[in-house]
Image: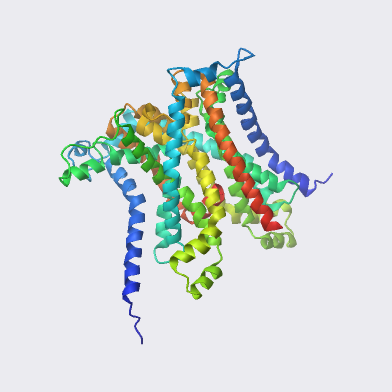
Length: 274
Length: 286
């Protein structure tokens, strides 16, 4: 049996590599973890000047949710995000399927158009909608916000679902045809089940897009604030502990998403940012 | 009548494109109307307000938006490139680092602002750490109208932290597509690490770098949540002014003008991007 002995150079390289890894992980992780610890700190512990709070409680989160009115905003955010997912999938899923499975004239141009639409800033969607929504009675409503969020999310949904559908092997669909399934049968019994995990990740991604969006939500609502809009409009005058707690409530769904959909993260953003 | 696949495809994509068409055409035309018309007649009142009114912070907002963009993008591109190169070859624990690096993609701008607020505020982590180490007696103030440079720094750090992942994902995806053979060949011929980087990897990575830079610049001009949380109107930016003019001053026309300016900048970068993307498509197919 031979034992590989590391040369000095190799060992040095290993040490440098390990330190680089620690540095990268801390750069992202430390602010995140510290800010969450502060959200759960006992309020008095915040003034004791210890880098990490020594005593913890749910008091700040409880206060924010139940006394400052954040629970209502959370509820609004969830409703808006679910409506956005439903509507943008209803409109976007067929388009994604068409881009993945059909060849038609203008396909590449339309796909480029989608990529271009993704760059359309939310500011220009939101500002003119204020007056329109007042005219048609959608002002300060969750449906109104969801309609605008759908416009923002739709290009992403089409691009992501098209890549999910493109990942379903043609062979399996053809095998289904050979064994006598109708085209709709193939779609329902082969394509959809195989695409489901990817579609679920795409749905969560869309949920998060809406959950995180603040400009449209802050401009189009007044009393029915979504969570980011509620925080944005009350944060400037709020005490520190309010902001610490608010941070955790906004971040929590994102972290759940990262954990659940981690397999899809890189590919999904590979698609969406390209 | 049986539908041809071509017609089926158009029927399937029509709803999405009609919806998006409406939500682009209506706001765009309405914004132009709000900006340049008053009671049906052409009017330059909003432009005059934008550049002339003492209430308007347009020039400042434009300068700050540009400054933040110009500082953030080079830093985050360099960092993203280093990390992407570091994670190029797979090793034990690489996936964990990968997840960590892209976490900020899922975090909203408001939340990113709050995270760094809890680090940098006078009761925050940084000051508590420095005080408990005995390095300072009094907390370092970062936020407040008299600390513009410090707030600007806080915004830059937060933006780099938040948006580096966008650049990273593009560069990382681009690196995965590079031919390993070429790099290995260079190694066989005794190329140094630096030579490999400057003579092979960077030239081949140029399209991805281009994409990343254009996309990031485009979104940098839309910066809003981070700035509003950390500095409010002390550091005015274009989107922040649009928000303020609309919700606080009820100047719809001015807000629409800001939105148009942001859109014009975004769309011109988007146009450049699409052109480079299409050029690349053609290169591949030809």
